[in-house]
Image 1 (tube, rainbow, N blue to C red):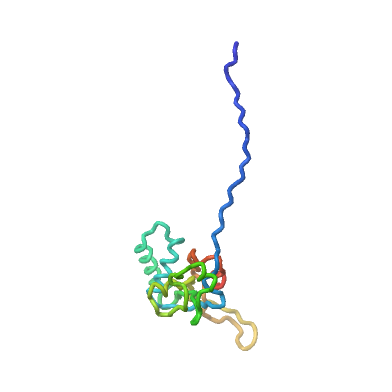
Image 2 (cartoon, rainbow, N blue to C red):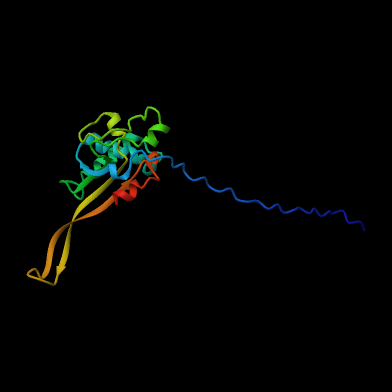
Length: 178
């Protein structure tokens, strides 16, 4: 009887996994000392913070639907009456983009100069380097010393969200906001 089956040997090829490339950092648009975190109630500025965070939090959702969702959330009992506060990380008055950033970004495209607190022009809105939302919430503090022994009602803040647009990441802006 003749064996007609054949055996095929395959050589194992060692492969090295391709590392995931890290985002290009590049020079920071602003030095950390040239930035501050300010609260805003300007609707167009708050809307810009929402459109900024869409790149991570609303993948595939149309902008009008996402913004309608954000508006509705802001109207809930938990968020209304000033309990939800939007903060923006922006350049201080008199600040300008770093020389290294300007050298690598001719025309700078909105980044450069100080943020105008009520300015809704696109150039000004591009100076928003990050945003933070906080909720004011009731809290209790136990006191055991001095004249204020017992439990005291206090107002506390909790972090709702922190966001830095991808083009401004890896410069310590999120860390600075916290």
